[in-house]
Every structure is written in C-alpha cells, then in structure tokens.
Image 1 (cartoon, rainbow, N blue to C red):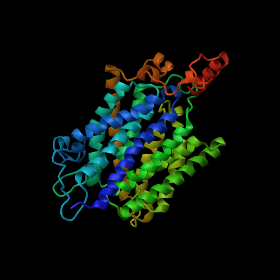
Image 2: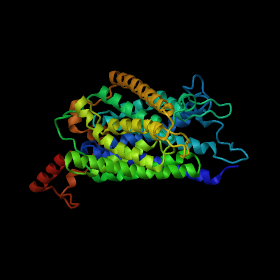
Image 3: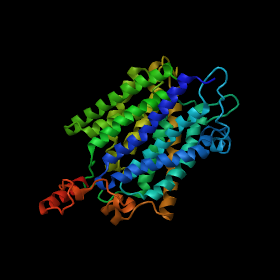
Length: 443
C-alpha cells in the first residue's frame, strides 16, 4: 500500500520545484532591460510547457527506463506515454506511487532547460529557442538524468555515474547545474555577443522583480533538495537544514566580496548570492554536516561573485551569468563533497578533510567533467545547426528595437499611459518628454 505521508511530501515538493520555474522567470526577467522582459519570461514558460509534454511521452522512459547499453540511456519505448505506470505498484511494505516520482522528476527537467535561457537573453528567436529546448532535452538532459539519477533496482539497470562511478549527486549538481551551465556557455558562443556588450550599460531594469524571483527560488529549492530524499524522513530534514545555512552563508559571502571590491553591497548581489548557494549545496545537501554546508556556501558566494566577471575578460557574453553561477557553483558543490563529505551525514561517506582520502574526490571530479564536456559539445552542435538552418539569433535591427515588440508584438510596460492618470486625452509636451526619458532609462 502507499505510504501517504511520503507521497504527500513528494507531491508537495514537486509543486515547490514547479514554482521555481516562474520564480526563475521573474529573476531573469528583472535582470534584463525593459525591452526584453517578456521574451525572457516566455523562454521559461515555453520550457515549462514543452518539456512537460516530452517528459510524459518519452523523457521519463529515457531517464529511468531499463538501461539499453553501458549505463548511458534508458529504453525510450519502455514507458512511452507513461504506459503501465498508473497502477499502484508500491508493494505491501509501502512506498511512493510511481507517478509521484514521475511528477517530481518532471519539474527537474523543466527548470534545467529554463536555466540555459539566461545565457542568451536579448537576442534569441523564441521559435528557435523552443526547437532547441526540445532537441536539447532529448539528446542531452534525458540521457544525463539517466547517468546521474537512475540507480540499479532489482533487475533494472541504471546509469553509469550513479552506479559504476558512484559519484554522489543528491539533487542535481551535475545533471541540472553543470549541465545547464555548460550548455549556456556553448550557446553564448554560438549566438555571439549582444550589440554593445562591454561598451553599453546593460543594467537590470527591475531589481524588485529579481529579488522576488530569488525569494521564490529559495522557497522552492527546499522541495528541490529535501524532496530528493523521496521520503519524509531524517535525510530530508538534513538536506533542508543544509540548504538553509549554505544559502545564507553564500549570500553573506557574495555581499562581502562586493563590499570589499566595489564599496557597496547590492540587492542584485544578495539575490545572486542566494542562487549561488542553492546551486552549490544541491549535490552535497545530504553528504555534509551543517558546518560543511556553511563552508560550501560562503565559498560559493565569494567564488561565483568573482566568476561572473570572467565574461568580460574572456570575451563571451553570458547575459545573466549562467556560467558564473550555475557552472562554477555546480562544479564547486559537486567537487566539495570529495573534501567535506562526512560519514555522519545520510550519505555516509568521508571526504578528504574527514579522513576519507581521495577516493570520493576523484569520483566527483570525473562525474562533473564528464557532464560538462558532454553538455558543452552536444549543445554547441545543436546550436550551430539551428543557427545555420532556421536561424537562432534575431537581426541587429530587431535587437535595437527590442525583442518583445519584434518577436511577441507586446511590451512589458505601457509607456504611452505614463502621466495620463487613466485619461485617453493626448499627452502634454512635458508628459511626452517624461515618458521618453522613463523609457530610455528602463531600456
């Protein structure tokens, strides 16, 4: 029979993780200029719609179906359309209905794809993004999810990272964050720099939106990490507390770097520090002590605060710092298990600093690098093919005009109504000038 408590927790966690994608839309939407806010948010909502369908059709089967060779891929046809999974197969001892697990893993796939969009803000055709999202999920995310999340159970064979390599990744440092970060870097290189990158100020147009989005991400991330215990138990509790303190420490770490480097601690820095901490603790939340989680968090905040500036030195335009936060933070959090893992934690493995030697460390490094290289290469190929066939990037003229108006025929803000107090009468000369100045400031 079904364990109703565990099932309630996992379905709640799935809903929390689902909320993270609209939260990401707000976070990313506030970070771009006013003329791009709707397109940025649409990329997240488009991923939510498309990946939900693909996951049910064949994504779950590719990720969690019986392995068809070398721990690389599940059988795409085994559970096509989720056939055979609606029955209660939990057994007499109790457990989760399979469909609860299906739903929980679906929202991981959705947000991983949505994360990539921040690297190509302001310049990607929405239709081409949707084509990319479907192809990338199919050939990159679903296989990598099999590598990392599919464990051998009874006669069902899972992925090579989870079982053969035995690298630890509790909630997706490799499959979600390194995967999305490497993909974001590849796409940024394929699409090229935004017009004016490095010469013009491209400040966030709405910082309150950014902070609301960061708050929703932090809230939803408790489902992301603690829900990955797949039960309402001690492991979930440890993951919850570690997620809290690592994120808090990362926020402080980022703000401290800003204060020392720039003389100011900013709201954008606070929001970015939150995300950096969440990213870093994701793979390690059940493998370290709360003190270890704080160490991972504060280093992640400082490291990512420094890493976001690499795009200016190395010349790639990662618009919203997907590389600096998700790739760098994901790498640090994954590798940190090899240093800070504690046998007292639910994972039960000591890292180098706890007397465990380098055995777990090399496994973490190999798993992280394998996902990084696979994702980067495949994404670069997919992006290049789309760019050379249907076109991925909008024209320079359209980029100047604003992608919201050109691609979606909408604007995030109705500037024409500024100063009108609801009246339909023509604006005065002063009101028109104020509206133009406001539009230039926001854009």
